[in-house]
Length: 108
Image 1: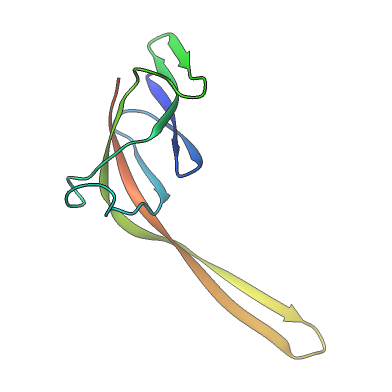
Image 2 (image 1 turned 180 degrees about the horizontal axis):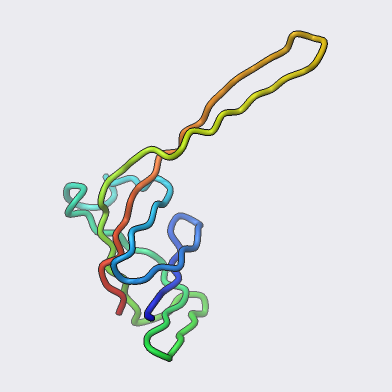
């Protein structure tokens, strides 16, 4: 099984060809074109092809991963409650992260 370890926006992801991943929101204005046409560059930390493994110091040279941006979506909502007994203090806030869905097209 061929796979690679990528670093995107400070997070590391183990990916293989044809896999879709969700990452923190990426500003698509940095990449050229519409959402479907946008290409993305990522730091490649490790590549495993057949039985050979290349580990970068810190990045793997000559390795390339083709990534297609599929679109943006919202993550699951997280509810935050604060409560103090006997003082009538109650607070509720929520948070919903903005995510970008990526398709790993090719690892070479």
